[in-house]
Length: 202
Image 1 (tube, rainbow, N blue to C red):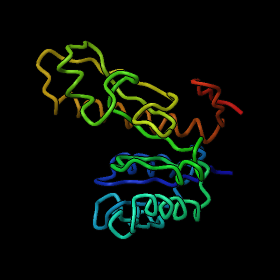
Image 2 (image 1 turned 180 degrees about the horizontal axis):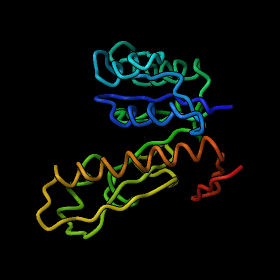
Image 3 (image 1 turned 135 degrees about the horizontal axis):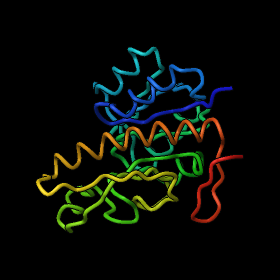
């Protein structure tokens, strides 16, 4: 029985594309059953449509408050009965209603080795700090910013001539591989969360 994935996107959907391609192999153990976005007209939604996957859009400005949006998004996702929700370049923080409905099975990526360099500027801060190695983290989403339990990490060396863009580009490539590999394992093997630790296996 394939695990049901709902993927949330805000832009081009390159991580989504990697997941769609992985799911085409039955042995991967997961299926993308829906793709949601916080804005219409983006390439991520077009990728889903080309793959024949259901899509939905839930815009913040269409709801009276941020909390109402969060509750609406939680309901949209729940309608597709996901086993796992993947935030793949989703540029909004989910809130209480969403976590109440889906907490413990929502993952997101961060372009740094958590707990280092949380927030939007991970690659730039790594470069500014002068670290020799950075990377990407897959984590369980909680109420904080990039603070959830770590599912997987991958390292990327920082080159002497790196710019923020060149470093971020290499992190994205490594992140994509890590995401596909880890989500596949979560789907096939199951996982448990104990305190700060995430372990594969039921």
